[in-house]
Length: 367
Image: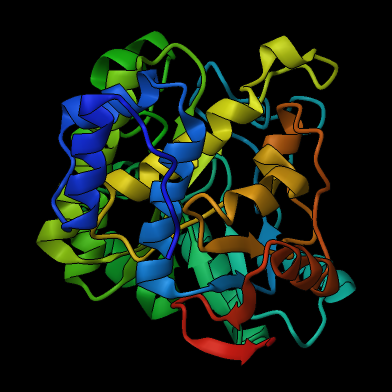
């Protein structure tokens, strides 16, 4: 049993009582936690919840990140990955070219392809279907976790098909789960200011709702650390919590720490370690109906990921091989990590590493 450090604060005491009695936290509770500087109490409380849900197990997966195209019609203010058609460095790979890339980096332990990319209007929807089909035919045993809700909305626009029809076509081609990207901050005011000219809040949620209705389990994210308020972040979490109440289709929540556009940007242009840990812990406390909160080492670094495993996170992500989106935006972390390093990292936090598949089925427990 963890001992939460005694705190004199009445509101913090009430929150501790609520969490321990399985009562849901409110918007006011969440904002209060963000305003508090008592990271140890917040972290220990989140740790209690994580232990209650998953014991000491922390999950990871052997996966590869794949990007078929970086050509994108959207111009989101925070993105350094996108290119215009014909711009230097722009590319659109065929299924065969992607297979050649994968074969160079693939090893038999890989269980998942994590596939995202630009919203490229210069190719038809069929291109995106065929991309999955080519991978599934060549690597039938690997789970295809592909496309964000924003990409599904884009496919719907270029094809004239409904979300449901788009998803059904992709599922026929091998789609088994959606990635969590495209959420950014679920606030229309934020999306306007940050030029998020892709799926709006209701469209993002509706794509996931539709996917859940079709039997797909999906992932979801929050990109924090720019112009949003603390209240925006809590409202974001509450909207996801509401949809999870309705469908129970989300597997995991992934807080993504905003990266500066310039890789040489100093520490003041980045989220603090304090803010990153607090966001993971608060996510664990607010999202009472989510099984897992992920610590994404690509954004926060491997050592902070290790600390996060004692502050509410129960997933250390995966091996990745070569991440491109956060690194295009100035991430200073490794582009990938080995299975051995992940196991070492989890054990170092006093946790039990568990290799999983996309759906959190346990493959191997490293006691």
